[in-house]
Image (cartoon, rainbow, N blue to C red; front, side):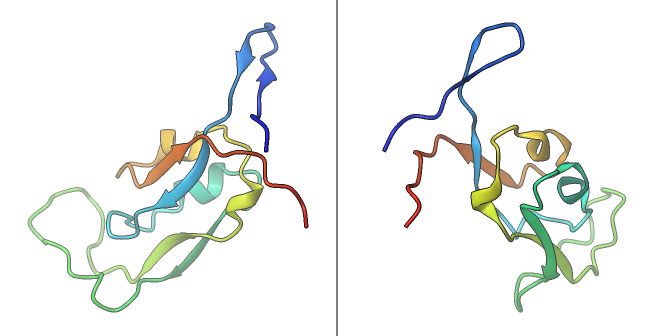
Length: 104
């Protein structure tokens, strides 16, 4: 395995931070991460039973009766740009270093 590094347009070293996990208990199913991702890493799925019990007192402007959340559909297609984290209003994603995975 080897480290993944690249260069920015300005010539600076860059190490991508890949999406490693998505916390569906925080997700509100807004789809912002899906819209910003050019690699089809995310997919909208039905919330699993027992995860749709939200406190209706939070005035976040979103419908608490939603039954859909985002899921990692193709996590290995992530390029590590972290755009999904920047647009997520609930900070659902965990990013980090991921070594190169050799193709089988």
